[in-house]
Length: 622
Image 1 (spheres, rainbow, N blue to C red):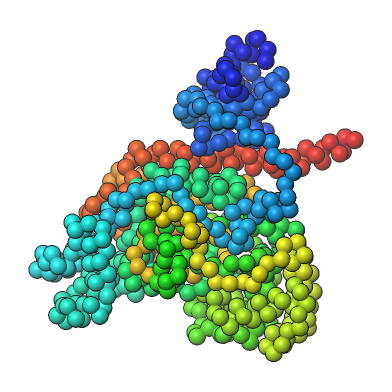
Image 2 (cartoon, helix red, strand yellow):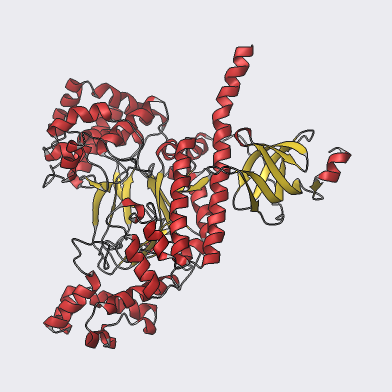
């Protein structure tokens, strides 16, 4: 390093760790900057270690940089902003050079943490907070007691028994939620009063009030303390799982399933079956069929099971686990979606029991709907126009509706058996029989068989997979259970999943996504992140009137009726125990971490899209 630069840029002895007063971003799109007046290029940002990897003009190697201040243009704001960063961390040992990778290692790299199941993954998280569940139960007990008659609310035998400790509280909850126990141990009037107090008023018309068996309702906590305080550990777990940088699309939220929580049948979120069918075709057509390709194009869904859904209870029928279809790759998902396509539906797929009410609304709007920042972005205009005239048919309606969960019999045993029989033909050439043979003929007549055969054969030649099977999203049961570490799970957005019935399960929706490929997607994530953090910060400060006056903040959380309405959560936050919530300082710290994460991702996205342009310019010059 030149002497004059050593004076301006201090390098720690025996390392490549650089310290300076501040970085000034001069060109966000090109990641160009000045370090104390000297030109450099920002290569990448580590949001956990708070360090930049930089290339300084005249210095051979890239350096790791911690600056006291980063000054530059934010991802969506105009003007300059100053973002304080911590002092220099101790530099870890540089990674050893790897030898040539085997085919299996390359396969794992291409699929990230999804290599085992192809569309979902699970891992433990290095975090712990044994008080989290009790804090959440305390506020729910207060809401429940407020709906009981005064004489019953004073009865200690009808409380959640939180003073007796965690085990005693869970036992009491199991009894109160059990209708048979209430009939045996309580008089009829008391049993009805307890049931009404748990469910809340008018559960059908106001499903955000009360404690739903699905885990939604007044359980909603925006910015739960455990998820916020342990945010960096959760981010690290998903970064390892996804094999790519992590971005934030919103403040963490909660799902708290009560004892005897109901099952949630197989379904997809974030779009229609038609849109998933087209998205699979698009990914295969451009040669981007790996799980990470889908994750960066369309996103993932992610949960953190803080309590419940443990590996030790996988074998039970009521473990409250989230489940997926192991072995379902993109080409195989296209086959499954083709089985429910109304133009050539497989005989093993039962029709819906009733017409989905959303079909009428979709037909009246001629398929036009509002933008969903959490939905799959795919153009289905032409295909939808062909199917809309038949929207009154329940089979067609199931395929085209969206705006909430879309249920389909993905996990039914006959459907899985038919799917695996079809895959044996498409991948290995085994002769199909009966209904599957007739379905193959229908595909051939529609001109759809050749694509499925080619893609499935390609998949089988590169990486043969076993049959598609139902599987809980949970780490291996041989993993240690002594620490009771939270479990992070993720599945590809728009892919089938279901939930088993079970006991108490405290789950956080972390609001995290793998870094998207498109810069505009990241901008939508950032806008949603700002909206959710802005509303939550106002609520924590007690400024409820500002929330109700704001056109964005007063909307239902996550855009669905099953999620708590803002006015309901404000009441819960104002009137009851708030220890389940992160403090203002904790929330502000996590907001800064996620803001820096998204800003660094936008810088990286700009660079990623500039590389092909620079290559094209060089070719034209030659």
